Length: 212
Length: 212
DNA sequence: GCCGATTTGTGAAATAATTTTCAATAATAA
DNA sequence: TTATTATTGAAAATTATTTCACAAATCGGC
Ligand SMILES: NC(=O)c1ccc[n+]([C@@H]2O[C@H](COP(=O)([O-])OP(=O)(O)OC[C@H]3O[C@@H](n4cnc5c(N)ncnc54)[C@H](O)[C@@H]3O)[C@@H](O)[C@H]2O)c1
Ligand SMILES: NC(=O)c1ccc[n+]([C@@H]2O[C@H](COP(=O)([O-])OP(=O)(O)OC[C@H]3O[C@@H](n4cnc5c(N)ncnc54)[C@H](O)[C@@H]3O)[C@@H](O)[C@H]2O)c1
Image (tube, rainbow over all chains, first blue to last red):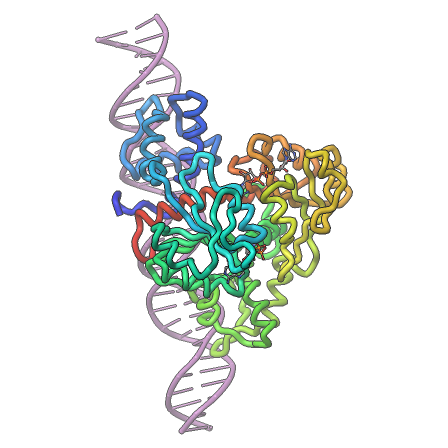
């Protein structure tokens, strides 16, 4: 909505850059070149320069990029200068692992509420996050102004739960179920399909050799 | 290695198609059109037809695709007609969730060995999978002919562990750590970076409206 | 202040992926 | 049988992304 629509491929790399800039910052490096970055994040240096250039001239020729100002810039762009709350639905196997992890390091996203149908989980606290019964989903999403949901329920209920979350005003869903959920066009879904990833890896192993 | 190199984008979609074909098969449907598939997997129907056509003329004009033969075809292509063993390294938070899940449904990948440094975990069995001490990594990978590793160790040790796994003959790594690990060019890495996914989602929410 | 070494930013070219379009064919209804 | 409708497969057009390659800018040393 701000800078004239960056390519999707670029957008997906921004968090990778952001993360490495944080590492550089923490180790008191204050200057970095696209070649050096390339090495660390495994993205071609020309691609990095191109990516950065969508945001203007962020570097200095013959010098490179200033870590601190680049970091500050990306922090803003990625909304990491404010805390973003997310909800997690489905406190099972995977849900628990994510709750416990809670995206702390170098990330300003936090799971602030979790939901599950299991009565024994309702109104408990797991890894510091309160678990609510599903009946409270809508209310909590609205009250806490939560716009992002992490979906770790069984596939069979994924669409129903999604519909509820969308009704509660959610705008983005990180979907760990294998179901391709249906949402209105103003809601964005990011699928994380681990079985797929493994199968793709196997396919590549069998059908492509070396590099690509 | 077999059919003349399919586009990467296509390869990544194959498991999605495969999965839905299984569902159709299980519900005794024996015919499907690209439009119907498109609806279910959320991929444009023209893209689906194009994807399929890389493998030859799999459908019939005016009719669609025969579910069973398409399924059989993809099963072969994706190597799902044989069992593939994988190893998991790092039986922590996330590792345990993956162990417990173990990719059963509609997938012929199985974690057959897990590894961890923690002495109390060594030589136990978690979710039916034996856990070995790291000292045995190389031997087990070689003995069990494991070519795929799921990496769920802390970032700080990720590169070292990777190097060991590679020395053990691993060819593919599903990397859950945020580190972009370095591997020889004959080893393929598939990164699953959950913090990234969340940050990308946030970026899209803030900077793109509606659809794309 | 000049010089050589760096390193960016970006046009242009190359490559990759998606989408449009439509002729060909199959199924089905009349 | 023939007309109508559905649907693929493939060529072409379009759009997206990556990569090349180099002029322009900056730095650091002298
Ligand atoms: N665990 C993994 O490693 C893994 C890997 C890949 C994909 N997945 C996918 O992630 C999802 C969760 O997997 P899991 O292993 O954590 O399953 P799980 O069964 O351990 O957890 C699911 C949780 O959702 C809760 N739940 C069920 N119905 C609900 C509803 N209607 N509303 C709210 N909560 C509800 C259950 O009580 C349970 O706590 C599944 O779709 C699975 O396919 C998991
Ligand atoms: N848990 C999550 O939800 C989550 C989300 C995103 C990313 N990750 C990433 O996944 C990785 C694992 O996360 P986690 O939460 O499961 O961490 P964890 O600390 O719970 O588990 C790590 C496991 O690795 C083992 N380990 C440590 N050093 C080892 C070594 N040298 N060799 C073998 N095993 C070793 C530890 O004993 C532990 O069991 C981390 O890199 C983390 O950044 C986790």
